[in-house]
Amino acid sequence: MKRWLKILIALAAVFLLCAGILTAVNLTVVLGTRGDIREVGAQDGYEYALILGAKVHAGGVLSDMLRDRMDAGIALYQDGAVKKLLLSGDDSGEWGEVTAMKEYAVQNGVPEGDILTDGEGFSTYESLSRAKEVYGIEKLVVVTQRYHLYRALYIAQDLGLEASGCDAALHSYAGQLYRELREILARAKDFSLCLFN
Image 1 (cartoon, rainbow, N blue to C red):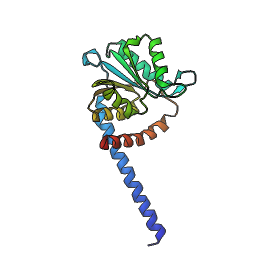
Image 2: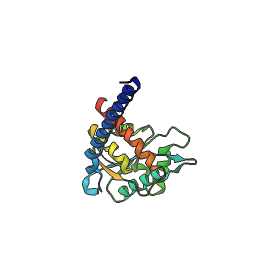
Image 3: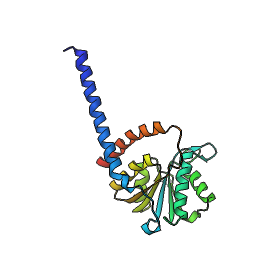
Image 4: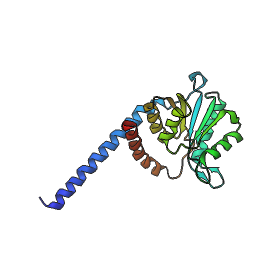
């Protein structure tokens, strides 16, 4: 057999192995958490909603995706399903996520005393880990879009948090196909973090 053909077969085998692993990991994450994405009410006893950060435009304007997350979290608060909001994201840039999120929550009627902020939630894993380790939260509702919720809830399970997910996909978003594809790799990354951390 020619050398180039052997190399091609080896590369194809490696590709198929990687694709199989990615598929297995993604199925594990999605199927293991989809039942936790549901409507919650006051009777469920959640004190906190963790709203995960996303892009903020110049001038502190929330992206459509982040605004929908905030609106969904504020609705949980106003309906009495949660008593406090924990806003988590990267607040290090010129237009900090958490600063803009807090301003939006206050403008929409959430008292500052019911808002906690974590400007060091640089990743989904860090946001959830810090919710437990820094803020002492054991039970929460995670607020983000459905495609992202599976991974967030998988991490929460691994950390021993009691968590439900609130789907904040109130609209369709530009560039969603790219985010869905990126999420396949992100699930594998965080699956590994949960496995080895």
